[in-house]
Image 1 (spheres, rainbow, N blue to C red):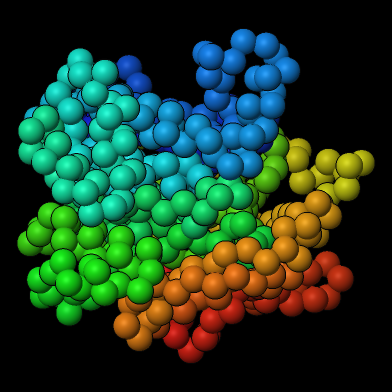
Image 2: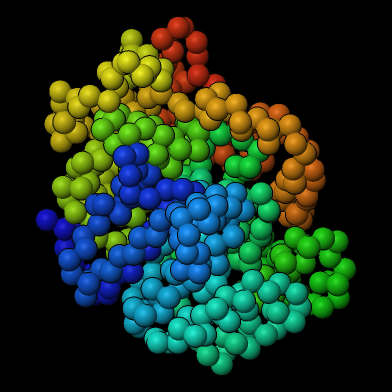
Length: 458
């Protein structure tokens, strides 16, 4: 059966995969999520999947060699970012009707695309059906960030588009820059038309080009500010100018976005999926996948799921609908150990378990998943170290006054720095910290933050 079985509206669900990701032998959480969505009845729910950056072929590129080169360049600098965003926008333009609920999901650069699409919908609105020729112009209006561009995009929206809200945005580990060239498109860090925003983040990713792009909620002071042209002219950096313009042109909604960003054990692909082959039964990535699905039910997003699909990832449908049940406490670690990455000869971790997920509780599965191997690409592949010793641009928002700070430095394999006052960490991290590795070492997340400021999340 499908849960929820019905609702008085239709849900449009868009899923954007990560860099180089598509349906394969090591699927990401985006594919896993998409696989458990009902697809037969388009009058109740319509679904859309887009493979990741680096998987697109543009029709202008005819030869196989040029196609391979184009894919490599796309992975490096995301030169097809516009095609990905406009592809999702076109799906909505062709299918959206009044009262539909829009829900968008993504991983890595696919998460950035998801947030860019949401930003485009805020800045230029949604064109009426069949206006295909206008989409490239609408995207140009969206990406134009000078004063004239903001004024023109606002006029474009009033002339051609309809205003829409976004019910739910769920992303796994959004990266802050897309490729070697840092990009910051409007309304990707904050967006007032999003009702619910959920973000699963990696505590152990260390690579320089994988800095997390966190959500920025405007402060109470910002909400009261009337942004003047003088303030914009006095802004000290491009980031701060864009911040001012976003606040000036945001829609003033009575209910602020419900934001929750939660940190999980593991690196980039341990959170977004794709670090292990599909036959692997227990993996760290299943924990943030189950968390995201549970949040869809807790926030009444309206997204429909196949009950069998929920069971396949370790969720009991009865614990999610008609009411989301309070989770039991996590199971004690006991003598269980954190497993290491299996060797090529060892297939112990990839053999199907004697007990299928349907026969186990979520707590039992979570214990096994929390102790799964962690795949640190800096340890597994030396080529990533080239970017660790090169000074690259980094940017963050200063907590004291919310201004954006940019600087250049070499990362040298350092962990992420979490500057939030309230660090929300999933309880499975505590489970992993209580266990030891097979050679007797304790797990300590690579990220830098104050453990006294941690709030544990189910």
